[in-house]
Image (tube, rainbow, N blue to C red):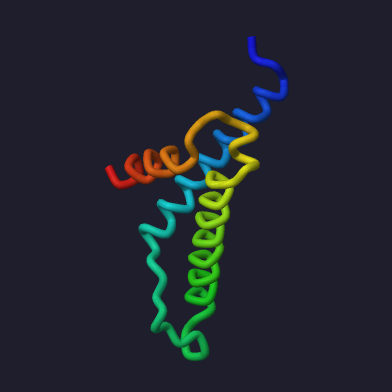
Length: 92
């Protein structure tokens, strides 16, 4: 039987994977339009750009987490390998 701290650690990692997949999907389907002139476009384009930036930041933060010492304390998994596997799942 798992200890309560192990259950919590697993839940943190599972949620991070879910959030990472969600961010990857969003960025894949909404690539950033770096040429957009926000001064001349509708508010919905501003909102879309904000969402792209939010999801890119989320993706980057979760990648940092999986490569961190904190992740290593929570799990004996290889964070880099986990990132690779999740990316492969989203590409397939």
